[in-house]
Image 1 (spheres, one colour):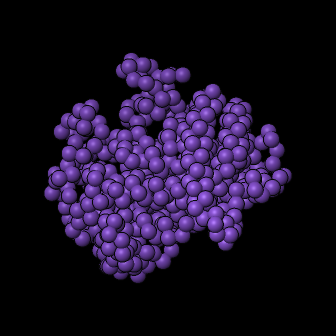
Image 2 (tube, rainbow, N blue to C red; image 1 turned 90 degrees about the vertical axis):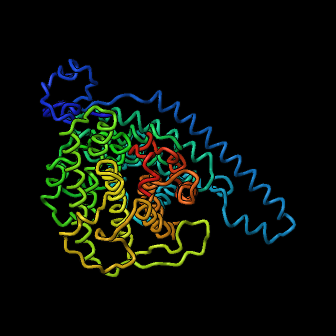
Image 3 (spheres, rainbow, N blue to C red; image 1 turned 180 degrees about the vertical axis):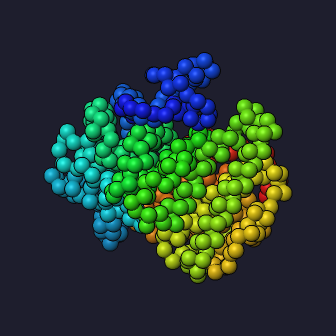
Length: 508
């Protein structure tokens, strides 16, 4: 979607293959001779006009949304008919969920109402990229940020209030935003501005709400990745650029994980330079995200081994060493976390036979929940890789033995505890009720989305855990507006991230 001229240090393909690039433009000769698609250069930023395809996507999304609205209205009418004999019940229905924009005339204030609703609701519970989503907002029709914010706020408001008119206005703003963004990216100054990044981030969230499909999400995340990479790590040292970068990282990492492609974020300069001026910003959340940056590259290597592209003894030995190193680094993080946050979680009884656990795990703060949920997600992925590389009897505890760990949170598994892949997956599921405990905390729902997506792959279809994941994804979509959650099962956005289905009987 996006790229501006300048020195690149090699094309994306050669850098990922770790070979010397001849840096021929627009595509390098090394890729051409190898008959490999050249993915271009990090600092070559250009905009690809997606308006035509976007309008088609808008029509599809609008039709799907209208069908859902009609079904909901039919259901509501049926309820009203059965309760029509009770005046009190009619009053409750009228007050409980007014059709804003139809029964209530908000007229010229509707844009402010919708934006205010989004800012106070969508980002509640955990920060996404607030308040930088409003960077550059001027309330003018030809302002890109105005259109991206309008698109996002209308679609969110329309979904949460079942209002098709407001939802449709968001679709119109989306097309306007794409047009204006294309013009912005022709100007190098605008292309390198932080507003360009936040505008595309808004479109990512828009796509997550507008439909169940993944292509739009992956496309816009690719735009965020190219903008961030073109800006370089130095441009993210000051606030709010650093904060926007931090909030962009998880989305970019998950995009690369879905594609099973190595991520530039694992490079040393991207793990260090942005925090030079604000070392205090390297929190436990930030440092566990650092560990996650290595997963896309490991997934690419695992896929190359599976397909035979890189399956020599030397390749496999190197991959084993990488996985072992990442497990050790992850356990060091976990030991530091345990020492820093003692007694910060506890169990809550769950009296529901449909859930694959009898107690849920609650935390003293959302930050602690996010940190451990992402830690478990990374460990689960590395554990699965290790079972493929070292055999199904691989024991993670041996790696943790040299690391001093004192248990202060007895309800959580420690690196030194024996565990199976299934037990680790269930620990993640036991954290989901904490993220869902307040239906108004939409940011918390968002944080649970990707750990849940990474977890369901370890469960066999038809099991209680599998059915629970499916039900939870639908609940997440219903309560938060992130419609993409319905698309996640059974194969994520672009298929399984790790092809280990045949090992289920061994690793469980």
